[in-house]
Every structure is written in C-alpha cells, then in structure tokens.
Length: 224
Image (cartoon, rainbow, N blue to C red; front, side, top):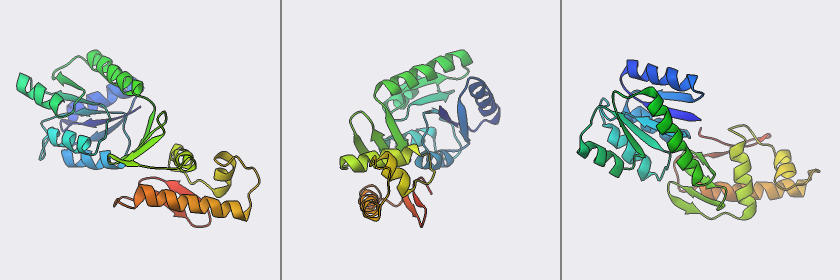
C-alpha cells in the first residue's frame, strides 16, 4: 500500500512516515499543494493523508483537483482546523474522513484501515495516473471519460499495466494474451494493429501519453 502524505510540517511528516513505514506502508511525502497535485497526476496511490494548512494553495485545492479528475483514491484530512464548518467543507469536497490534530496514531491507523477496506469493497480497480480499469465490470475510463475497448484490447491493457512499467515484448503478448506459444509475422502484425488501436483510444485526447513503443523491443505502459 502506497500512501501520499501531504504535510508542510517536517516534524509531523517525519512522525507519520516513520509510524506508517513501521506499520508496513510505503509512503511518499509532498510539502506543498502543487507538488502533491503533480504526484497525484503521475502516480497511483492507495490513500492520501492531507493537511489543509499548506503554503501557497490550500489543501482543499488538492482535494478539488483530485476529485475533478474523478480520482476516487481515499483521502483522510489531518488538520488543526476543528470547527464544524471546516469538517463539513472537507467532507463535502470529497474527503473520506477528517481527523483533527493532535491525534493518537493508533486511531489514525484504524481510520486508514477502514478507508482502505471501503475502497477495496467497491471492486478491484487498477490505476495509472488518470487511467482507471475496473476488473469486475471490465470498464475503462480516463479522467472520468469512458473508453470503449474490445475484449482483446481490454486484456492487453490490463496485462501492460500489471507489468508495472516494464517493457512487454510481442512474444509475451502472443503467449499470455493471445495464448499462442509460437510467434509468426502475421500475429506480430495483429498485435501491432491492436496496440495502435489501444493507443489511439487511451492517449489520443490527452496531453500525457501512457502507451509507448520501444523500437525493436516491445511496448510499455507508464507515465513518462
């Protein structure tokens, strides 16, 4: 589980990182709203711990940015703002939970686990940047826009994403997606056509290109 900590107080951030890492989580730290938004656009996180009192842009802007892109990653606000109005605003903007500083670390861990359980109960979803793949419904969307894929294109996209940014060869696609052990030129041509169609569907309308061809080697799905 990879958690993003958005916190400008170095002492609080270090406490969170140490405690979460000792509890088995991987953490990434952002000190300001703009840095957090860039990280969220380029990486998939399982949960965000968000301070509101950040330098420059307020933490609420991070939350709005996230939800505007239809990113459903759970967000727990951690803040010294304890008024009812602040709580209501944070939850209305799309936060999943709200915890006032100072807080007991065991309570934070319990809230993280509860948010992650709720998130997983919605069904297995793979994400990369603003690309979201629902494995149960076999649906794909990017930045909230539904993308219509053929069954083979869907299987190929899932296979590329599960490769974790590693290059996938035509031989691997033939064996694991087409279930054919012996490669041939006609099959390579079919794979190339499918990759071209898939790239056109998931990248054509977006500035950030995710599907890349590595000449003479294969294909890779990643944030460049």
